[in-house]
Length: 159
Image 1 (cartoon, rainbow, N blue to C red):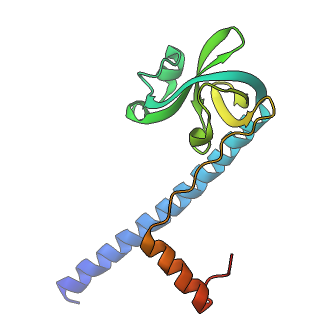
Image 2 (spheres, rainbow, N blue to C red):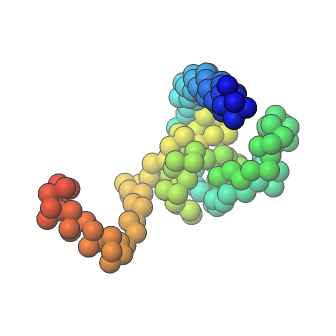
């Protein structure tokens, strides 16, 4: 074997080992995340609250209790989280919002929210008003032309 073949073989073995390690770590992390989601779902309560403000901010600047900040990993402290300031009953609280629903949370409106600890899982409108739907972006000229061409060709089902 030439040295080039030996080097390629070593690189191939390292890549296979790295892929196997990532596969097993990913599976373990997915299992852990499913358990955490189940715990959040079991502890959720519905609370009516007035949303005062919502922002993406660093956990250090968010106004969360010091015990929460000290429990977060050091690498996570620099990243930005979706934070909601809300009035729940007589007190103003700072909550962490789920990333999936952060854009649909209305500001300066009263909502009924599913809260688990300091984490907001879902938000529903109160007083019979539905929450504003997320507006779809306007499609550009080329995007519309591509869709109509696909419809005419039969590659895409008709609307």
